[in-house]
Amino acid sequence: MMMTRRGLLGALAVLSGLGGAARAAAGAVTVSVVYDLGGKMDKSFNQSGFQGVLAARRRLGATVHEYEVGVPADRPEVLRRAAAASGDVIVIGASAREAVADVAAAAQPGVRFTMIDAAIVAPNVASILFADHQAAFLAGVLAGHASGTGVAGFIGGAPVPPVLRFLSGFRQGLAHARVGARLVETMLAADAGAGVWDDPFRALLAARRQIDRGADVLFAVCGGSGVGVYQAAADARVLAVGVDSNQNHLFPGTMLTSAVKRVDKAVVHAVNAIGRGTWMPETRVLGLAEDAVGVAIDGHNGALVGDLLPVLEQTRRAIITGRIDIAAPLFPIR
Image (cartoon, rainbow, N blue to C red):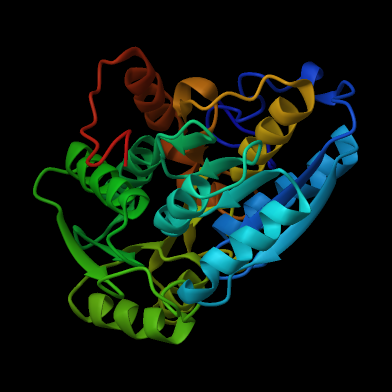
């Protein structure tokens, strides 16, 4: 499928339960949204969630109270304040999973949580996950074709489940596209503590080390820290892959693509379910088949990937139909 400038491979236009129904009145709904570490304007995962908040206000008339977590120790108190402001709390960020599980278990009756990007099995928690590995596989295919050295790099924030799924998918896509390709892997930290997702300089130094080892396509899965990877790639005139949001515009000419997951759509879906009374404590997984993940192609990277669009579309269809089976660690319930 060819993409418009604003599109994604696979269109990424509608999630199940969205579209025209979402634009209908959802009733007066008030929710709290909590952004985990990195801030809501991180140019990546959280910011995609913020776009969902804006859409929920505009399209559904929702009242949304917003909260940001500064350091891990603040999570429980921020979650409790969010729950006090609204009986429905949407939490954006897998790193907050344990805190959400603890606060949800102790919450007053009637308080409900929607966890985006992590799964919690509890009677007052709904979970929305993304098939990160599918988007990453497509990015790996692009990297395999685009690399001149046959060496790609992966820089993750911490080994949390979504990051590991991105890593696994990218590794498999790279190998699928290019026999003998090598992947250099770096995690910025052993756990998802403060500073992992908003330290571009740390990520820049990691990227430079990978470039020195021959990597000429770098995939950054480290939230706001990823800007440092993109800067290092631009400085060295090698390629980078963005994550979560479409980040192609940040460094045009060296951004090969972005592996995107529509956190904004997930937020709108959650608000819509709350407003319509269809919220349920279940886990939903959104992937290529739901047009919820993909790789971004636009005017900023079209010249880099234009010749590969047929390969990408063929690969996308093969994943959806099961002809390409991608292993996914820690999926779906983690």
